Image (cartoon, rainbow, N blue to C red; front, side, top):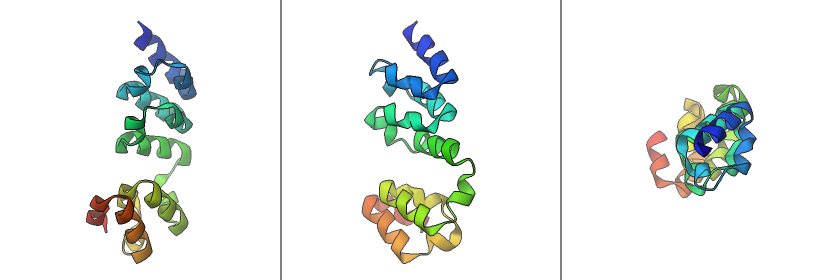
Length: 116
């Protein structure tokens, strides 16, 4: 019952996740619904889900509206790559060839090299 109540709450206000039991902040479905409603809800997700690529991208997409335009700007990509190396995957082709961006991404996550 608690799970359904929290799921309904985050559908209305993603940041309601802050009031959920810890175990529910680690429930992927609940957290995805929360960040789809309000990307800032990512702050209240479990550590594991804050590292989940789909969850993070849903939060970014909700906050930025159009992720494609956002990831065309070098400073934005550099910031994202320093936080999560795999963010390089969403950069423009031109930016994925930028040595500074690739280096930052790979330093954070070696697997990011496959997106260069």
